[in-house]
Amino acid sequence: MFLSNLTELTMSQGYRKFFRVVPALSHALRAENYRIRHEVYCRELGFEQLRADGLEADDFDEQSVHCLVQSVSTGLYVGCARLVLVDPERPQARLPFEITCENTLDRSIVDPMALDRSRIAEISRLAVVGSYRRRQGEQDKPISISEEDFGTEKRPRQPYLALAVYLGLISLARHYGITTLFVLTEPRLAMNLSRLGVQVERIGGGVEHRGTRVPSRLSVDEIISGMNFLVRALFEVISREVREGLEAAGSDALRANHLPLR
Image 1 (cartoon, rainbow, N blue to C red):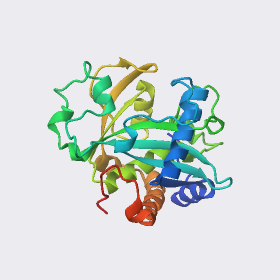
Image 2 (image 1 turned 135 degrees about the vertical axis):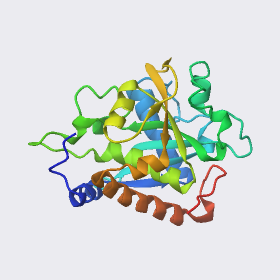
Image 3 (image 1 turned 45 degrees about the vertical axis):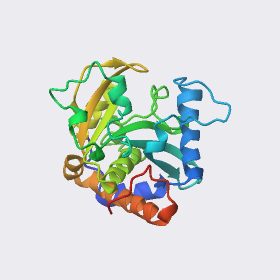
Image 4 (image 1 turned 180 degrees about the vertical axis):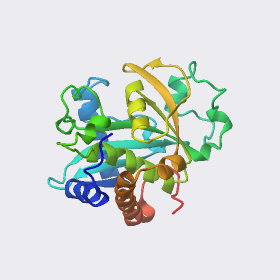
């Protein structure tokens, strides 16, 4: 991965010039989340049916914490994602990946039902609006991140938007006391995350879910401790934005029955 032309300062300053992460802790901000998902999953990709209200939502949204990525220049929200938490009132209720991968999970690696379920969550519904999925051939993917996002020696790039979505979720997970994350994703995306220094452990066979998807496990502590200095610089900026968003939302925030630890 080419990083030699980047510095901590250019990484964080470049991000702040273009984007900010906003925890979606109000009904209005959640609606922005659902709007982006409808634009991407329903209109652009055809993964879901079009909705008359232009909002793509499901039964897991109420037990999720959501985040948005906002364009600094336009004020528009251009990316979103959610962490599906275990409902504390129904701790044995399965997360989406547990349902989809019921017959393919390798429980000799990990049995999600045997874990402290207040400490697990699932990354899902990551989406970036089409005009920001800039690389040729990626328009039919909800989100992408790979080594090519960093460019070459002569033309370095910074994958601010894609990284902001992921790092916003990692920061939210830390605030909510989540230690283990699960994700159902394309094999290629799981591989690219590994190449960017994120330890992704495959925990079962592939399933057909909008193409082939594989279940994987990630450790929040390992992700944070294993960040290189560039990604860490960006993570610190985004973590501050998440913390400020949580503090500003106050007691009226929509928190999926969970309270942040700090």
